[in-house]
Amino acid sequence: MISCDLLFGNNVNTRILVFLYRKKKSINSSNMARKIDATYTTICKNMRFLEVKGLIEKGKNGREKPLELTEKGKEIAEHLNKINSLLK
Image (cartoon, rainbow, N blue to C red; front, side, top):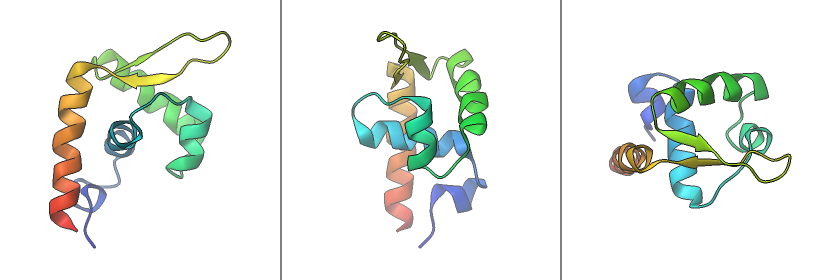
């Protein structure tokens, strides 16, 4: 099976966007790291990049900072998810 990772390289940004798109609800960085098999540090570094690009936003729920896709992020993640589906 081919995936976006194989097509575009092992891109954590792609995995984050597709994961959030499929999840349909917010999740924090440490839980996401476990789910997509990446380190917490890698997730945080990539999240900052995605946030600057306007693709994700961090909510504020007490001490938790749940991650969610912006409208722009949802649109891009939808395309990436379709590519993943076509490559299966």
